[in-house]
Length: 103
Image (cartoon, rainbow, N blue to C red):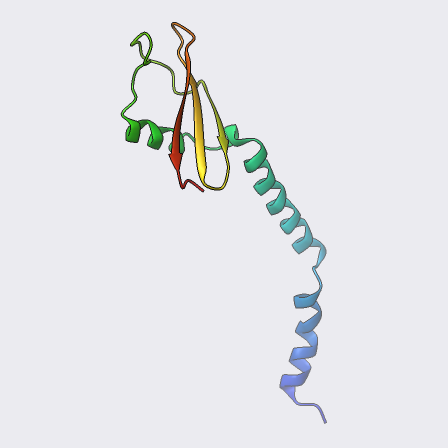
């Protein structure tokens, strides 16, 4: 004879072992977002860039001394390093700032 607990286990078992259509869709979307963040880091916020600029105390171009626009940057990120490539608007000089352990 079955108890209530065994019946409840049998009812919930398929939903835990098999992905429903909605769960599969949510998981697929979550994986896509993770991949998009890694392959297109320009979609990320400017928080990492601003943090690097504050740490390096870099508010002007090292070549001409003029200010630069933080929005004009390219960012590449691996597991341990975040590199920000910045271009000066005046002299078109490009330089790279780095910060370690940014995940």
